[in-house]
Length: 177
Image (cartoon, rainbow, N blue to C red; front, side, top):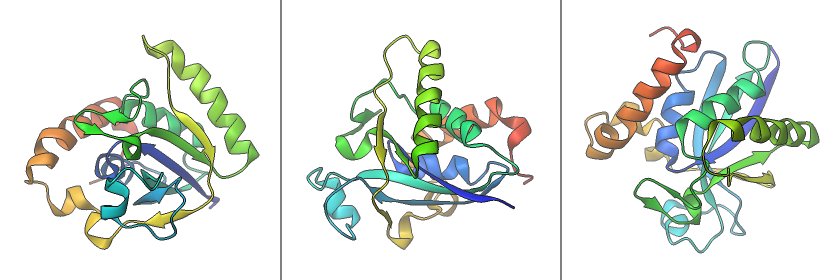
């Protein structure tokens, strides 16, 4: 097993985490924060939009089973990378589309993935590409939020449709239920 990590932000981390934890080859997807100046920020800090952090998911995966490019292919389906600092009703820099690369190889592969993905969108991709400086796991109640709260309004109205789209597109790449 070749364990690698990817750190991605595409709006609310609950949506992204729920999908990646269902993807074959993913060992774990953890909701958290990255990209800001404050050490160990909390949800209340990040929600102010003043810390510079984005809500992200850090994905640990087996690179023998799934590639970084496949991780990014899913990323493009899970959110709108042409929407600046917004995903649906979630508004602010903390909801920006961002790829935090872990090394120069990931940076080059992410640049190539952005270029390839641009042909699938009518508007330009605004996804930020930045080096990962730190990742801070979110509070425990944010982890596996969708699985723990499937009947909560946000989960039913926002996450369910995203998961259905994801499952339809990547049905052959899902973990067995």
